[in-house]
Amino acid sequence: MSKNSFSIKFLYILPFLLSLFAFYNFIEYAVCYHSVRAISEIKNEEYMRIMIYGSSDSVSGSTVSATFSIIDSNGNEIAVIERSWSGSYLSVEFNRISMDGKNFMFPAKIYGTNQILTKSKKRTRGTSLAKYYNDNFQCMLLGAGSTYEQRKKLYSISRFATMTLPVIDFGFKNIYTVDLSACRTGVYYSILKDSFGNLVLQQL
Image (cartoon, rainbow, N blue to C red; front, top):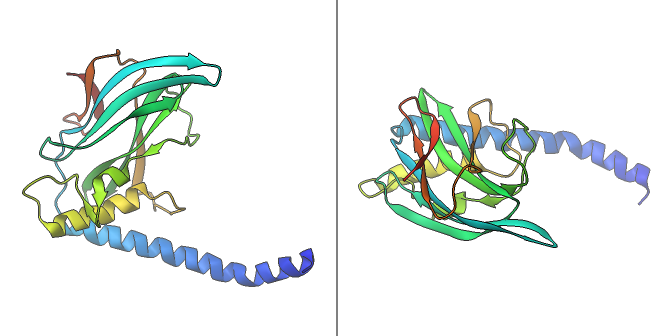
């Protein structure tokens, strides 16, 4: 097949691909919006607990070792990630969905970097976190006392917030990053939500 023939065929199917992409985004948004309207805002006070073990250097570069615990709405630990990341410092990225006057915050990613947090919007690879609290179409960030339907609705919101596939968020998603470069080794820290709804890092 010649390059010209391939280009012509691609131009024929391009409108179909764009329509499929738009439909996919609309469905994801609609499911999320319906779920937001169906449940109350989750009142998490603590999202994660962290301890930095230390850093090391080798010919392949710097690494940082740490343990992260994901906390549910009852303050209980539901998952632990313990490993090393490439870089000299660590950061945690959170994705927030704001709809219908409600806010839902989700831990999204842990990643290493060789510089202290900047205002750069450059996307960075890291460890995706949704798989640690989304299980069997339920979001386990809702603790004991929640219903299956509530966890299922929160799963739909979490999916829209943390999806790695190309998704148009229609302006309802915001990304927040917590810089861990100031954390001392061997000390526990917590990522909390203050009275204004902001994420703060606090030593335990």
